[in-house]
Image 1 (cartoon, rainbow, N blue to C red):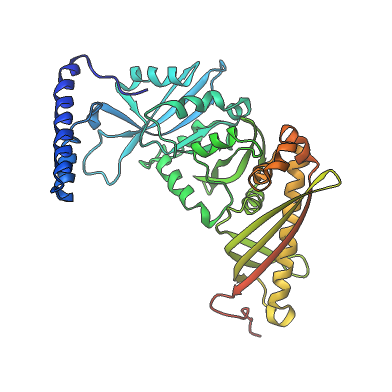
Image 2: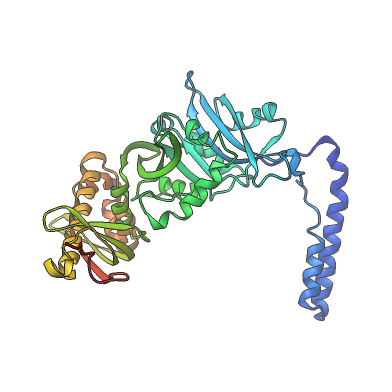
Amino acid sequence: MGYESAAGDDWNAQPETEAAEKTGEAVMRSLRRGGASLISLLLLLSLGLTGCWNYAEVDDMAIVAGVAIDKDEDGKLLLTAEIVDTGGAADKAQAGYKMVSLSGNTMFEIVRNMISMTGKKLFWSHAKAIIISEEAAREGLVKVIDWYSRDTETRSDVFIFVSGEKTAREVLNLNSTTEAILSFELAQMMRDEKYTNIAPAVEIWDFIDKLETSGINATAPIIHIHRKNGERSERVAGTALFLKDRMVGKLSGDETKTMLMIKNVLQGGVLVVDDKRGNPAYSLEIVSNQTKLKHQMVDGRLRMEIRTETKTGLDEVMTTDGFLQNETIHDIEQRAAEELQADILTLVHKMQQQYDADIFGFGESLYENQPKLWAEVKDHWPEVFAGLEVNVKSKVTIQSSAKTSRAIRLGD
């Protein structure tokens, strides 16, 4: 969907071409002489960058920050674009935005027809978020994201979300009472997601790659509206599960953390560990995690061993008894490892029994490490995955107890 030149722009094409050719000739002459300095060479190259064939003034563009995709009452696609308001007052601390919605049969049709509403062509290079309603996600996302991945003006590093609300539009329009641009906030939120790891950070190129790859199913984060004390704010937690391009289920935030650990992409987060009585008592901050998968065929059945090694810091003790008196650091490590093993097995069995969805990339790992074995099972991988025998071994190490090695003791 490249920019179309106005009718009067053709006269300027020839001079720019000639300038570029002259610049190229000058560069080649300098190289042949061998006496041109690096600075001179860069200066010559920069002369050819002074013009741009699709140059456009900012005021002539409708800069898209993000979009929401729903289905309207007639079953057509409904696209809502969050557009940066470049016509606001110069003394404002931040740019404002405006929302534009339009229905159509295809994404490209809607995007083009929005010109009649904005008076400007939509500019996509700064888009940061695509929020898709669950209804649209369950029908299939290829018809929604194919245009975005194919168009020459869009970027592949935009974050993709599935709405946890009835529509995607209501999430995108969350900051209607402020001047904040929600899509930009979401992009920053996903860049900081490594500190919580309760939702996967998925860019559209990665999502499409998973759709096209055998041995792994695609996932996307779920975005909700958090309501408390009359205030509303965005919250990204949980995961949408896909078979091919259709959404089939959801994971909670805790299940998402387990999924990321199995996939060996967990970068941080918190492990809550129970005391001996089964009550939440300790918070362990994840410093690092390493997960390894081992595959083997035994009696015609594929087995997989998942080994995790997690290094943590003890950041909270929710008891006045003092863990050094009633249980040792080793006791907490052992219980944390046992809880991790149980969580991993529970999630793997859930994917096997309810969805036949290999969101962990077990098949992809098998292909990378044992391609001959993968060749034997790839044609019926969903069935093999469903019957996969899984064993888990987890190790948790507490490297430090922060600033103190004792619990807070209450006085008489």
